[in-house]
Length: 268
Ligand code: IPD
Ligand code: CA
Picture 1 (cartoon, rainbow, N blue to C red):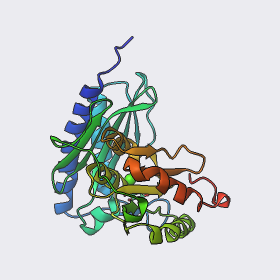
Picture 2: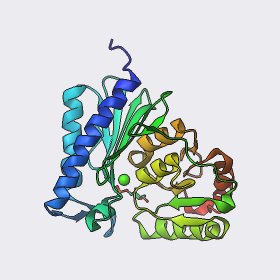
Picture 3: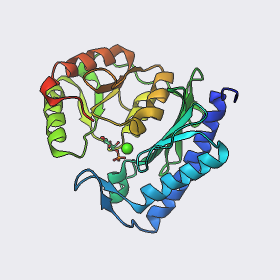
Picture 4: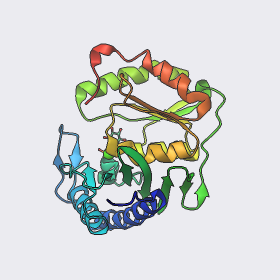
């Protein structure tokens, strides 16, 4: 039986692969965006580079750790023979990537027996690397992260995001309409992984999204938790993810929760 992997070593592997994958997609962008296809709707895009980057990550992970599982945005899930599973988003913020907006990232999380223990989120356009392993604190490069200290939700800068299905987005818009008058302001940056890392860093005070996939948040929520933020998992029955400074996260979650109409169902 294999020894349980060291979370710090898994973090190091995620950082190394994230930096190399980030270089791949940034250089790919300068050569031009190719083969833009759509997925769940006409506005849900996937580029040739999303697929190439995820293939690169899968091949490198299999070479480094044969038998580990991989769960990525663009491919079928590969099951794990080791208890270790990697959750990867090759380009989070694909629409930003398409338009040349620099807020896109590679996200890599390592899960052992169903618990995320290490992760890296790399923003290639600025060479910023957010990373953490469980119990080890959170960092941007070598700077320790501790979030912000807002006094209340009313003076919090809150980021959010929207999915690609029109009806879902209308529901997300209705939810936003109910909170926008109760916060300092709203940001829609376009990459959930970076939104959450920015909250960990204190560039914003909180982030929420109703209806998000594990590859979008798995690495970043560990980074936020290790920075001392409160993370409300979307495994709650309303499917709402909230990440924020401890002083405001619960109040924000409550404010949002009462405005989620149960008739909307839990987002898939
Ligand atoms: C999307 C981004 C966006 C969030 C969406 C995600 P993608 O991921 O993270 O900020 O609001 O819900 O689907 O499509 O750019 O990988
Ligand atoms: Ca994503």
